[in-house]
Image (tube, rainbow, N blue to C red; front, side):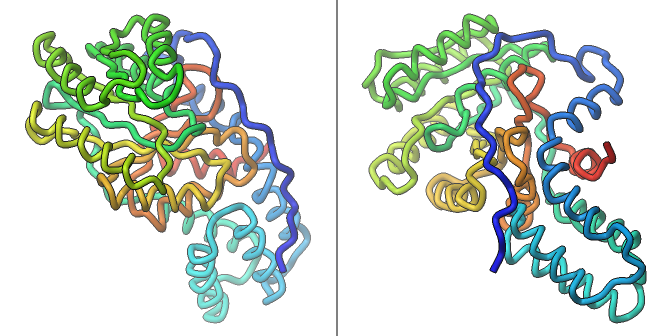
Length: 334
């Protein structure tokens, strides 16, 4: 039986003020970006990676007991039982063939296997044609509205004309929350009153985007419970409205998942995918969990590209996901 060795970390607040994005857009060296990622992923690195290194310390060879303990660590880091079993099936075969003969080589091989699993085949978002429509979905509490604001800010910093659509009329104060973010980052918001038909708001948003020659439209939707059939049907209706107004839209269906919820995030993605299709994932609150292995599990099991990761409260902490950079950050020393 696996032992619980990771203490639950409180979720960070997402209510910080927008700040100038530091990164490639503003000319900061790539090293600065990596340093920030490494710092924010400290809990994951201090979790299974540190424990892994402690297991390997002083070992001269690879024995079955070592492999069993490593396997347990990865499962406890939320990497998923199926994913971990597949990884260790390959590792055990390599050990048996004498292809892996010392713990250092085992660490390097494990790192490479994780990096390979994260490289899900996908097409890069080009943000064209115009208007490029992003439909954002996800349950309550995952940081969906804040992620939308951070994405809008990022796109605006890149010189794009962005429009937000407040189609989450279901939750109290959701419209006001998005409108507040819009004012703070100077991005217009199309809204109706709370309780209005989300499809009607979406229709007006598409109309406005076409008339104003907007580059990117981001549609916020209710944080609907994925078990509620009527709400999922409503989401399908929103998608139909978008496609009727803008050819081949939505161009991206982005589901926002909370990394701290572990394997439940995969269940959410599966159910939403069955209803409206999912083309990309934004994984939030990675800085608030020691179980960063969920990133590997999601990529491996879903085979849907992780587009963005949230690693902190600042506006620049919504990062474009780079598999190799992510693995280097969590396996980095210090």
